[in-house]
Amino acid sequence: MTEPTRLLVVDDDPEICSALARGLALHGFAVETRNRADTALPDLTGAGFSAAVVDVMLGADSGVELVRTARAQGAQLPIVMLSALSDVDHRAAGLEAGADDYMVKPFSFEELAARLRVQERRAAATRPAPARLSAADKSLRAGSRHVHLTDREFSLLALLAAHAGTPLPRGTIFDALWAGESSSENVVDVYIGYLRKKLKPASEFGFEIVTVRHQGFCLEGAAPLR
Image 1 (cartoon, rainbow, N blue to C red):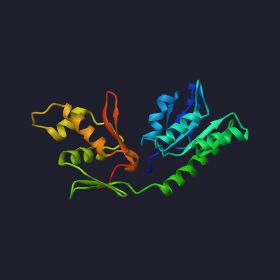
Image 2 (image 1 turned 90 degrees about the vertical axis):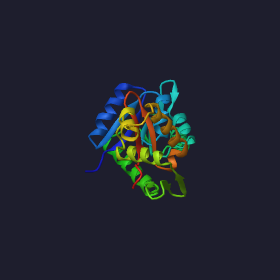
Image 3 (image 1 turned 180 degrees about the vertical axis):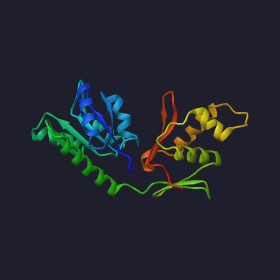
Image 4 (image 1 turned 30 degrees about the vertical axis):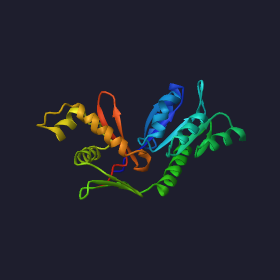
């Protein structure tokens, strides 16, 4: 069964966020919401979501500036902007900031879902092939990038890739890779740091290693193939 598209909705009104989440869920999207620009920015620039819907007005913040900043920081996911402002200048500002499409309220969920699917297909057509982990030489390859890993880094990345999308507690990782050794669980954080440095920028590999508070570490995005 195909996994639902992970969609980020950004709107400062919780009721509108809830309505968008319910409506888009009926069209097969797995929706998460954010109410502020500062909390949404890491999600737009990370590898966890396949598309985003961003309102032009975010309270004291500007959705247009949020999109502009996200693109400047390397955001690649399709973004559809929503607004009650229908004049050409506002539409142009959103598109010039980096939005892929712009819809004026009120709108139908059928049309919004269709436009999101169109943007998904366009993005998929230009998306690079998944990164590949090679056990033969302990390396990770993605396009022209070729990163050599130590045995432990390779094992750690392979473990996270095998559970992509699911946070692994620090203790679980430690028991899997350092059982019987005299190290402390802090060694997990050290090696996560090593991997993150080697995999910068994460956008080139199609995934990133994120810290999920109180849950552990998680590989988000397209897991590397073996």
